[in-house]
Length: 313
Image (cartoon, rainbow, N blue to C red):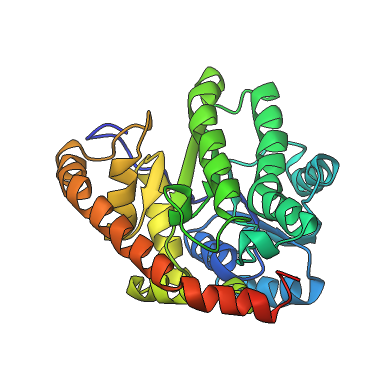
């Protein structure tokens, strides 16, 4: 976005939010409703969807706003296309103005303990659940020549880097980043913008679930991450979209990793990111050295843990 370009405004536009019943998706949907958007949320749990819809209705600023909730699984291409088609029926089949892919889940653990299903689910919940929706939306937007429409992915700081415990999750987020960077280029053919958000730790129901399997060494490494609530994270995400940022980050640590691993993604701020480049050149190796030291020192404890689980039997 140019220096004097007009910010994207969600008022009066149709926003489609997957994973919209809890966490970041719900906070984002609430923010969009307050900004005057028509909002469609999709998730699987009907009880949570009903509660989410009630909270959205209480925030409407215009009686003409369409605020709807739909129960769908988004695990497959067919299911994702079905969900999108149903949502678009209210709009005579026209694709949404913006698609926010907030659905996903993580289950941290040690790679050597994971089952085939754990690893398969990691890709499904971390990559495919967003990729299939993006695929369905991209086709519909291209066919309808929806110039100015947007597709937004939600990744993680772990899409820029990774460490012990995230073998079923981080690869999926790296793949998601690869998809977003590819589509940022390809969707220029149709005038469609693509963004991807890299939030740090968020205190959501999903975070509580991942803590059930999170190894102690992962918790120790993450002690320096203050985390954020989904409300402020949603503000950061929407602000990044409005300002036209292809990569959207919300904290200094993620910004440093972004600067050190940007690849071909456009810069948001040449001066600031140049400073981040310089700091990251020094800080990232220091961080990595510290993490490697913690992991190495955890070796004895880890071997005892595996032995107690019968891993070596």
